[in-house]
Image (cartoon, rainbow, N blue to C red; front, side, top):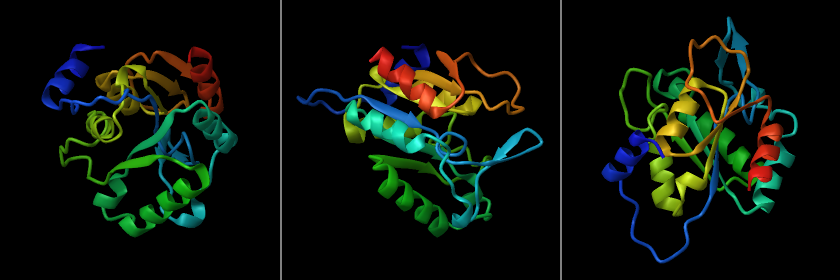
Length: 195
């Protein structure tokens, strides 16, 4: 576990518990679970529920993780809410649909603008630490699957094994993930092999 993850735990200690710690797979939303529009090398989240579509193989991939007794937690930045480009009600409708159709355990959401310097927006690990306290997670045995540099930074800061789905975005230099892969189904196969 890296120094940043240790310092995060020092600031946000987990509760004392007699129950065994659980493993989770954290998933970014746009570009990992559902389609997003890519313009000039940058991905954009869907802003209408009618445009919200799962990527191929996602349902079966999530089912396989559930069968392996992982908790499935989505961690997603949605700055379009804070920027006034989509209503929180529309995002909530998308997330209710996701929970119902994928049987997700939880969705952690950061609705803040990019310039608000909140503690929950990736690349900060706030959503991971909140989930760890709520769900009694062992982050060192958990996974982060994402398609953005911020996903990898946040996952590493939280102490998770990081898997990067390379979509070819123009993002500059990213930190090296533990593994690079091309889809969520491929990431799930890797997780199940390692577990």
